[in-house]
Length: 111
Image (cartoon, rainbow, N blue to C red; front, top):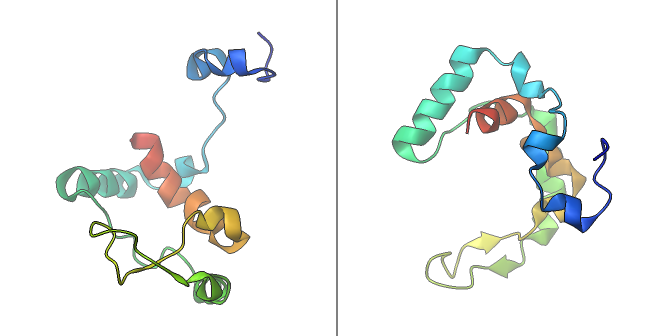
């Protein structure tokens, strides 16, 4: 195989073993911070990452997501009164920073 996936058949293979791993921007995060984040997830099932985004990033997300908050939870598990935005990364680019933030990626690298 080459360096690119060109068919659905190639997707069925061992991508991690076949294709070169690209460096994660999570590598720039202090390992002690990322390890503490992982420990919290393993202990509590979640971690709060305070001050992850700037005030400007939060304002942009609020502006973009506000109009999308028109759906409610669909069942008791989601909460019928809870506002939901399904597939938010598909609906606005402003939330990308949450998914590609180095601290988030450092945690995902450890998971």
